[in-house]
Length: 247
Image (cartoon, rainbow, N blue to C red; front, side, top):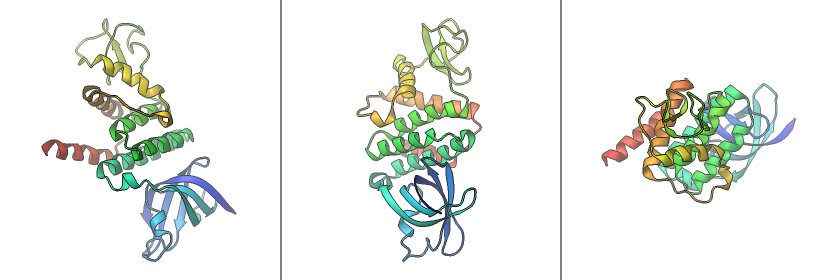
């Protein structure tokens, strides 16, 4: 049965000397494995449309719970800006890897929209770290470990919020504060805004450097503490940051 599915390539692997298999996260059918015959051949029409980050309509011989076969791809967005910038590529690759894990955990098709919206904003030159953090925060819902960001995670008090704590699960009020590092007041408000914002409707961003750093640090620690996910692409991003600091 021939079907046309909207999706994005999140993984690819060699199958033989000339062919490869791609995993496509689709809008409506979850992750589909697709055989791309001859895709590694220089003259193949599949060569340029089967790499990671390919976003389009995939025309396939669909086989449920088995490998489908690729017929053709109609590109929706080729993400030219991302593909010529190592920082953008790094964050986009991280989001692909993270989304794959989140989908496998939750089996919720909503993660597809979050991924696409996030990558489009990175393509449009919005700060890739901030966009990534917004997606990361929203994904915690699907992983079942969302931090408490509407009241104190200890006592439930909704006023006098003093800081964020990854180990204590979210907001901490002044009464429950012990040895936690105090974050910027704007950081507390921004984290909540990140959770509720519709990524597709973002038209501008004004995030001060301190809050940018604090939110990213909180999310890194939170993911490490609660999700059990280890992502190679995140390590690469951290290595890139170290290089840029040295320069």
